[in-house]
Length: 355
Image 1 (cartoon, rainbow, N blue to C red):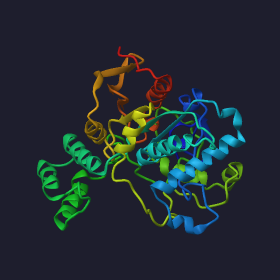
Image 2: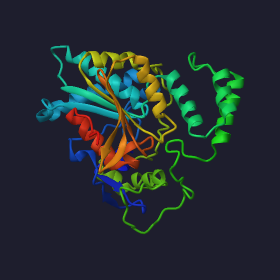
Image 3: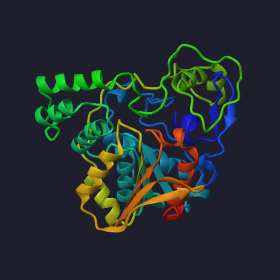
Image 4: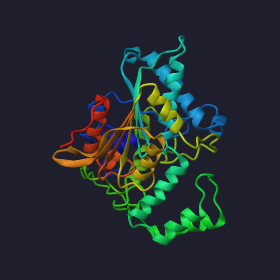
C-alpha cells in the first residue's frame, strides 16, 4: 500500500492495470526496503496458521528483527550502511518498538549488529489517551463537531482508563453523525463517489493529483494474477485490510517510554504530521511530545520548499516535530514533493530551510 500509493517509485493509473513514475519516490535518496508486517498483512503469510492468533506488538517487533538480521546476512554489503526506520499510523508502535528491539540485540556480541541511526514516524499512534484527546480537539477546532458534543465527550468519556460508558458511546456515535461523509484521513480531500467504477482507459496519472478512489484501484491491481506472479507473491485475495489476523494479544497503551529510551541512546527521532488528518492528527502528536517535557532547542517556525511554506517545525532536545502543510494521514500521497524534502532532511540530520 505504501509502496504503490505513497513513497514508492511507481503509482497506479486509474485503469488499475498500468503504472506511472513517481518523481518524488523516496528511493531517489535512499535504498528503500518495504516490509509487510505482521505476517498476514498484504502478501505476507505464515506457514503456521496459529501464528495469526498470536499477533501483537511484541511478536511484530521480534519477527521484523529476525527478518532484518536474515536479510542482512543474505545481503552483507548493506551491513555497514546507516539504517533508518520509517512508518505511519500504528507504526507509531511498530517503528519505535523495532528500533528498541534492535538496540537491545545490538548489545549481544554474538548477534548481527544493525547500524540503526534513527526513526521517523508520521501521524503516529503514540499514546492512547492523548491520541483520543487530540482527535476530538482537532475535530472541534476544525469546525467538524459542535461545542456541545466536544464538551460532552470530555465529560462522559474516560480516555485515561480506556473504558467507555453507554453515555460515552452515544456521544461518539453523535460525532459520526455531525461529521458526515468526510474522509477522516484527509478532511479536505474529495471522497470516492463511485467506488465500483474505474476509468478503464489508460489515462496518464499525475503524482500531484491523488485519485480519491485509490483504494479500489490498488485492490484491482494487486489482485491481477499477472501482478502477483511478477511480484513472486503466493496467489491470494489481496485486500487493503487483512482479515487473516484474528486477534491482537498485546498493545502498548503508550510508547512514550520507548521514545525516551531511543532519545537517551542517541537515535535521531522525527515525528512528522500531515496537518489535515483527523484520524491521528497533529494535536495528538503535540500532546504526546508535550508529555515528554523536553527542552525546546529551535522555536516553532515555518519551513519552506519552492518559496512556499511546506509546513512547520519545532525542535526539542533529541526530537523534532514537523508538519506537512496540506497532507493527510498518508503524507506522501497528498504532498509527495514536500514529503521527499522532509525525508531528505531527516536523512541528512538537518532542518528544512527557514526561508
